[in-house]
Image 1: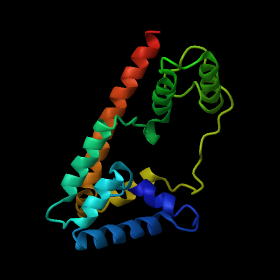
Image 2 (image 1 turned 90 degrees about the vertical axis):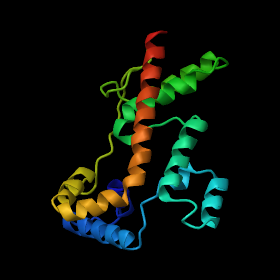
Image 3 (image 1 turned 180 degrees about the horizontal axis):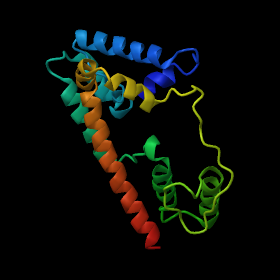
Length: 199
């Protein structure tokens, strides 16, 4: 949630940590005043038919919890590859493994995929690399907001214990989805590493 707000405010570098925290508090309190929950991930975790169904039903039929459960069901049912920005090296390891694991992948395609990962992915990260992939010049994204990061905003918000109770309620269904996705990511990474090491 916080990183999403920072992303939306990315073109306004004049905002201070206090300004951002104030905006977040205002949005969260407004949402909870109207008994709303943050449901941003549902935009891409529900199928178009499911989204249409939820839009046409009243809120007593489909609660935020049932929407979250449907999103989790979709992660499993559609065999989604879960990448986590916070674990980009692991995510890239999973992606590389999936792109190369097709029995019909030709040697030229494998070389092309390896070249892409060599160009954009650093060996000094925490991912496990397929044999032969080495480091190249990689530029990490650096925040343009001097000193204002997701963790610094969260640290500031946590100072207001009363607000944090409201905040945790506001994002609780998103958190359920995220926790499940983390577990899927870790299992997918473990499987990719085991297959890479078994080659």
